[in-house]
Amino acid sequence: MSLLRETLESGKFAVTTEMAPPKGTDLSHLIECAKPLVGRVHAANVTDFQSAVMRTTSLATCKLLKDVGLEPVLQITGRDRNRIAIQGELLSAGVFGIKNMLALTGDHTVVGDHPQAKGVFDLDCIGILQTAETLMGGKDLVGNELKGSPEFYLGASVTPEYAPIEIQLIKMQKKINAGAKFFQTQAVYDIEHMREFRKLTKDMDCKVLAGIVPLKSPGMAKFMTANVPGIFVPDEQIERLRAVGKENWVSEGIKMAGEFIRQLREEDLCDGVHIMAIGAEENVPAILDEAGL
Image 1 (cartoon, rainbow, N blue to C red):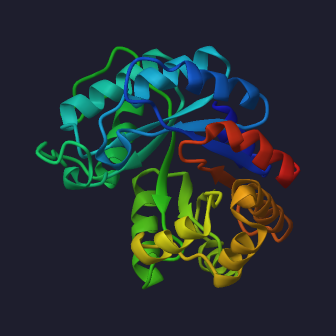
Image 2: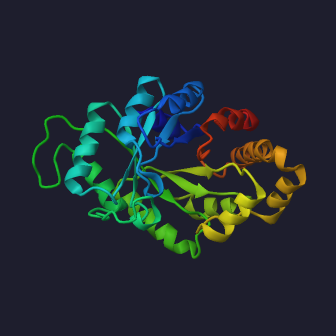
Image 3: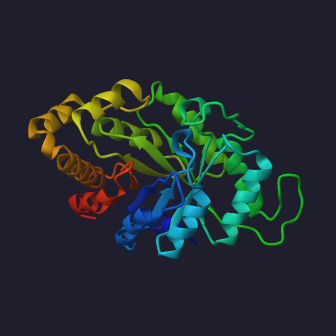
């Protein structure tokens, strides 16, 4: 059983973070960022060609993180692989002893750095979850017996601030039916939205990790609200950042993230948090310090 699964199923507050593989073969910085997190977070979600940008694979990075003692969450999208490759990737993860997997459909290739690439989308998020369940049952998708099978704690994503929220709730239940046991949310900043989301999902058979993306500048906050579907940064948070001056934006964003995590935990609005530092993984320990974790 994975540490993440053990933590969530025992009712403890789980903490995960996100690691984005680099574009290249030098993972030394990522590994150095990972080492201080061993024993402080329960798992690290390794992105799979995030935003359709070509990088080192999630699987290779997961193996390196596991080797330094940080439990990985393998991320798999349906954009770049057909069902043969997805099954092979999941079996390979099983060979390495990787026990967590997060399924995503994936952003379209037109938003990435290889817009001419052909998207596959043979399986969507639900299809990937179902595939993992089938492999864990000892067979492949066409019924062939496996010689050894993987073990995964399965996850998916959800956007609490999506409107209408009913669409997200329907998708969420379909993902649960397909095998998802935990959800990582899109970045959230509004406590009222999380209070409402908790009410709507409290009877669902799953665990929810609230997505935390520390703000780095007022401009970043305004851009995400205007351009990223499902993200809303309240005006008072933007003004708070603006008031401290440019030289303090990053430190204030870290402080705000820590305060928000404390409030989420105190009000029992989620089962844990998923911290996404987005290219600043070295700041995660400071966020944990501010949150008292």
